[in-house]
Image (cartoon, rainbow, N blue to C red):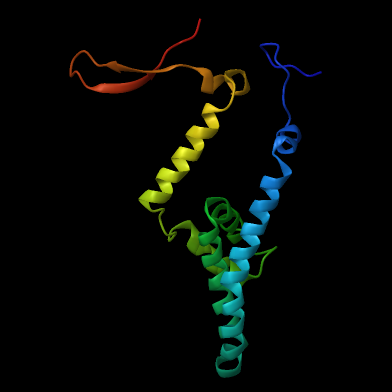
Length: 161
């Protein structure tokens, strides 16, 4: 058994992935597939009409833009994949790379409600974990201290001895 510096059993990435219940992964897959289908099916119908009236290049541009927008709808993980893909014109069509390049600087920001929901999910997940499961840096205690000169609050870390 592999252990870390404090004698705890080290958990590999594969073990962490295997610990996620299969039904959650399946539900996430179905959700992504449903959103993708709902977003791209009407675009496919529109692309057929566009191909007849404007030609193949306009159709490709339209579909590439829809793919970039779909990645924004699917969320930050997919946006990051699109950003990475935009830097690889050797692996992805250059036209698609250009459209994915929009994801570097013109991404629609999260709404306040989305940010609040994401924060609640993170806090709920962190509350359910045991302290020993967290990496060492996360176990360091956070505290607020006052700067003596100005009396303003600042975040600081206490050193564990």
